[in-house]
Image 1 (cartoon, rainbow, N blue to C red):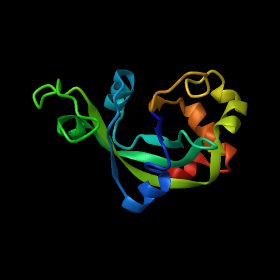
Image 2 (cartoon, rainbow, N blue to C red; image 1 turned 120 degrees about the vertical axis):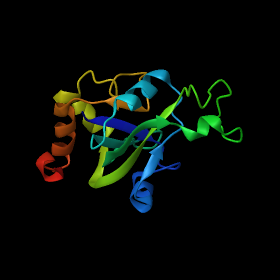
Image 3 (cartoon, helix red, strand yellow; image 1 turned 90 degrees about the vertical axis):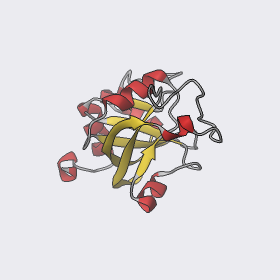
Image 4 (spheres, rainbow, N blue to C red; image 1 turned 45 degrees about the horizontal axis):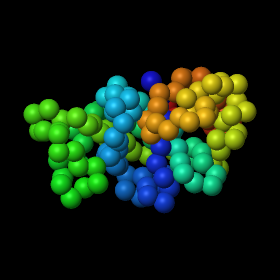
Length: 156
């Protein structure tokens, strides 16, 4: 199943993911987004979306390289993501590890995604949707790649 993961590029960009090679996708503090993280499987592909930027859009493709496990930041009192109600025995929050697959040749902007029929009424293109992790349909994933001239089969 394909996914969309969001990050603010001034905090952690797709170029940062390429630089580090692998990153824990931690700090997610929304139950629905957490549940999506828990559904991710190794080798699932993700559209890496730059949010809270001008413009916003998909910057690259990443891959899940480790399935959900307890988010370490929930146990760190020094972290802004610390959760005192979460315990080692019953962790509340999860994270996955992702690695870069392909940088897009150009940012695929939200405005462009909105023009693609496959993205009509997607949670991403609807007003007020703020989840940082979302499932996307295979059709949406392929349409996004086609919009920037990439053949999905080239990723396999």
